[in-house]
Length: 65
Ligand SMILES: [Zn+2]
Image 1 (spheres, rainbow, N blue to C red):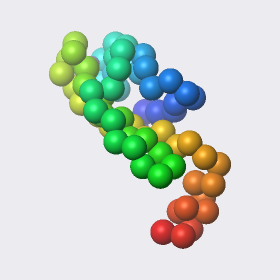
Image 2 (cartoon, rainbow, N blue to C red; image 1 turned 45 degrees about the vertical axis):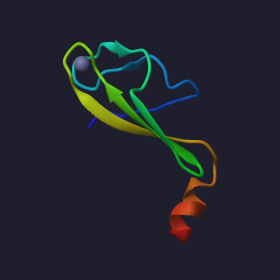
Image 3 (cartoon, protein in one colour; image 1 turned 90 degrees about the horizontal axis):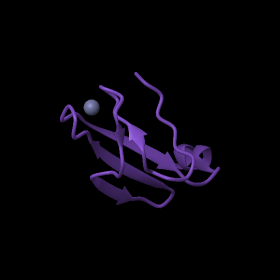
């Protein structure tokens, strides 16, 4: 599976299937320390979700869960 990594901007993410850039996520869900993005490629109609983590204490959150 392709590695998805976000730095800051959730824009211009390449399609996981055909590689064409997607300008903006179709749907965004914000969590306490993360944001889930649903991307929809206009070129091949492929949809995929990616999660971006904000803070560094993702590990502690995982341990607490
Ligand atoms: Zn595509």
